[in-house]
Length: 80
Image (tube, rainbow, N blue to C red; front, side):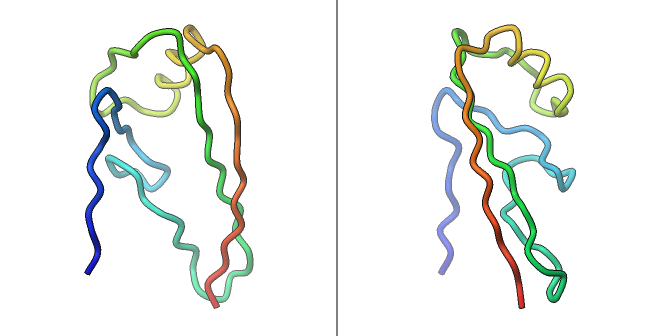
């Protein structure tokens, strides 16, 4: 049984690289080798007040105005 996670209070979800609202986990095509997945975490000096369907460009512009620090994790994943 898969437990559906909820969005923590004070956070928001945006449009994923898959074009869907919210997080979509890694799922490369079978047999296509190792895929690189980039995860970014931002520390901001204020909460962002953005519409639910905000896209990546608008999000990045808003983050840039409030950015204190950021870190990136690159994960490798392959489906056989």
